[in-house]
Image (cartoon, rainbow, N blue to C red; front, side):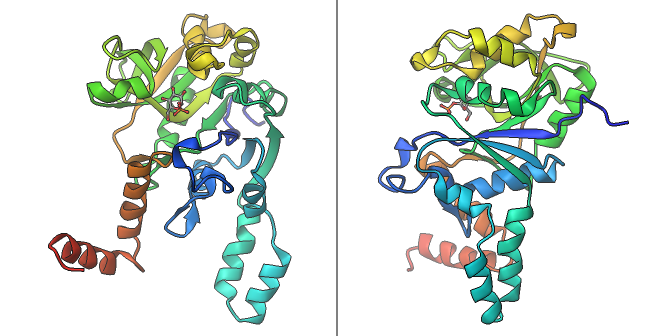
Length: 300
Ligand code: G1P
């Protein structure tokens, strides 16, 4: 018999406008910007699939056609690659369409992350589900989702991923006040504040864009008033879950992430992701490393 509490579905909101990356994102969705030779969003989908979550709902908006095309078959391209004998590339291209069962829902009006997640209600139903934010790239060498799924199986309720950041960065994130549990990797979340005003953050634990959420969040989101920036905030809905009883889907824990993560919506962090991932590739790493060393030493 299948276990109804197992996390089978991931929701990936991609309706954002990408204004931090203009003009590159004028006509191209920010999620499609390449990190080496794959669009950023492909790493995110591969991360979900690697954690055995192969049912994916994209919450999309206007101008996301190229993203839909990327995860679809491309018969004429595949034919052309076959004719040219580029069979390995043809395989890679066609496999992309089978990577996961991908579904779409449109957000219509961008009213915040909480609103985007509420659009997933009918698709998700009454099961815990994952949310992966397309801007956050978690390096595949240091995954966090498997630990979050294990924490969900152990503690129930909802599970966040938090990362310690310096004082001067916490206002950019959701912030979690936490206390220890008997598990050294998992903390109990006692308070959540979306993007605290500088100097008021209850801790240095920043919420990163990976969540495993109890479906009780949908009823909370329905009544959620706009929060920071006038948007319906997911953080605010999760804050309500902290105080709800476990048998009503309440309780929030977090896995402390100590791996590599990039914000591909931020220019400097995006550049770091490209360099770091390229350095790790066997086909590019050695040459890039020696060029970088040379370049930084004043060569060209
Ligand atoms: C969102 C969330 C925030 C979280 C962040 C992680 O903010 O609202 O709580 O810390 O993602 O990347 P955004 O970056 O979309 O403004």
